[in-house]
Length: 288
Image (cartoon, rainbow, N blue to C red; front, side, top):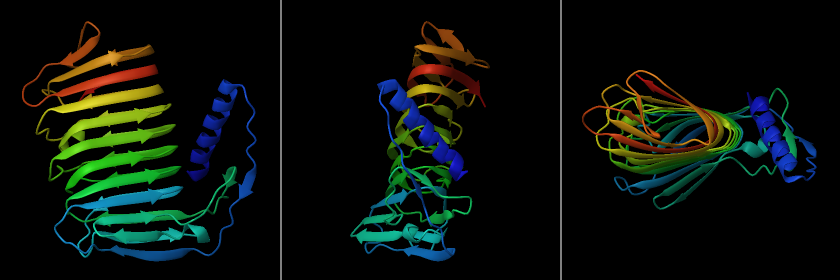
């Protein structure tokens, strides 16, 4: 998995170099592995009941996040076999940062088949602003049943499944996701309880599934390069897709219909307005 994601980075850098008409020298560097270390994570904050700012900065590897922390704000474990990947924790009042150690990578890294960097974390149900910053990684992220006031995810070449299997317990102002050349699934977005979703991406394969209990109108902005994007909306939810597609193809079925340059699904109750700018590729509109 990690070697595949790192290859994606190399491909994107190479394409960028070709497009600019320049030559980029990417020296290799072997990253030395050692004994596998397992550490427990237990992070509390001083002021219980107050909203907290949580930043999770993760490099390459596997990141798993889910609800369920009871004894602390964040609890779980990490496994790694690169010494400089030892996680670091910083607490400053109501701000918490959990980050990968101080490994500095120059050029294109070679980790080998035995590279391990795995984080398994649980988050507590307390009001929080959550930021996840990652590089080349595989992510399984379940955020249903938490109390997220805002969510911001930034990653590079990623393979991510982020979902809200249960409703977010508080109103979320903005969910912002920005990614590079990736494969990303955002599921259960109807449960996220958000006013606004902003999704920006490079080339990749993306699914945005708005299943769940939509409690209020949602405004969505999608800005993507050469990509394949699938939008899934439950039947009966009013939706308007305002589409600027360039050299893209739109495939729609079910209750969707074309209205001028827009695509509409009729329904009742809270609705979704989706403004999408797709440079090239395919857009699929589906029902659930």
